[in-house]
Image (cartoon, rainbow, N blue to C red):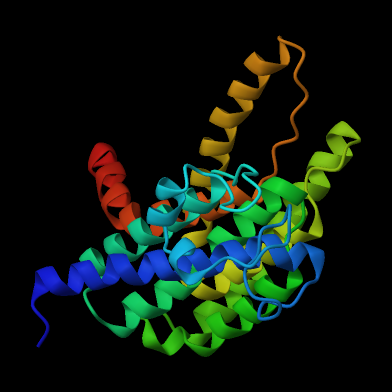
Length: 258
């Protein structure tokens, strides 16, 4: 049996290492490049990144956020993704311990992180992540208590269908496209992982956080900035809020009613 403190440290280190790989996915998938070849290299000068310059977070700090050879600035996204992955891994460990639920939710959350950063930068949600992710969610549904394969299947169908209706009504009322098919596929994947019963709360959390970002956008727009805010990251954030706090928030809400 691994001591609790050591297991927590391992979960953080695992998250950091996986976060480093996520950065590779975030950079290469939209460009349709191999995730394996060539090895990590500077996008500016093409020089290979040595193993001692590829240590998550630490190497970024030692190098001052610049390439060792050409001194080109390295995006702050790299350490942020690594830290985010480490935090998610640790908090999932706190909630589920070293269990299959921890490992499965970690895979799911890291897929959401990858999709979110790609959507933020390129305004696309890659089918190469969400469609296999949906199939995987259906396949592992029996590992989660209080959720059957039927719940997972209905979640995938309701996720895509429900969001399609919302997008269609928005387009009818405003004459503008509300969201793309990538968002529909993403919510279908989310529904496959958490079941149809979770979708209303996830959409609420996503819309709420999206509204806050939209309000911030309005403030920025007064200064002449034009920023398109994708919805994928908010669907991901809403899902994480539900997984970590959904039951507690629902109990609190019901306590206010009764």
